[in-house]
Amino acid sequence: MSEKSSIVVVYSTHTEAEDAIRELQKSGFDLAKLSVIGKDSHTEGHVVGYYITGDRMEYWGKRAAFWGGLWGLLAGAAYFAVPGMGPILIAGPVVGSVVASLKGTIVVGGVSAIGTGLYSMGIPKDSILRYETALRVDKFLLLAQGTAQEVLRARDLVRVTRPTEVDLHFAETERRGAA
Image 1 (cartoon, rainbow, N blue to C red):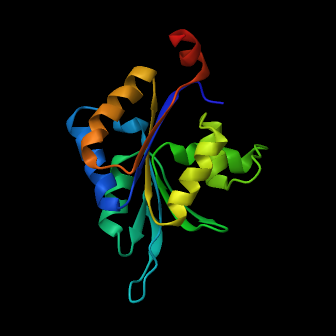
Image 2: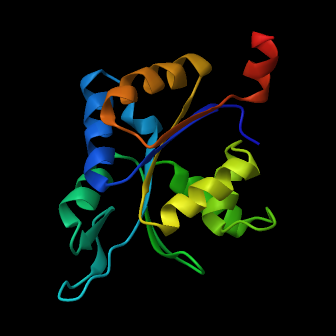
């Protein structure tokens, strides 16, 4: 389990998630602590592809500007085909948690590989099930990890961006310190 606290913010559209990232960036929030997870949008008449240029993954499809911009701004990029969920795109450090959970022996019953990665970051299973449901219905997750003070600041900054859900998950050490 992670010793960092987290905030998970759910957005109905990629535009809302992008607005939140801009708000955090404008306020000087450390973008190295942000991640975004969302479904790929395969639609008729749009070619979708992924390729690597140098050390950066590129996306060619309906939301190319959104994902390409995120992958240039946030550390880490990934595409996963998740059974029962479909194609999932990720930008940011949560990529490492998902990959580590796939390579390791972390198993969390009833959740996907994405959920297992979130669990390894200290997010409780009941919350993960809600987040996976949000992804299945084409919503976007914005995550930030850091100290309790950092995630509280992130919460205050994203409140103006019309999220559908905002959850704070405090690290056990910070929970004990606050008691």
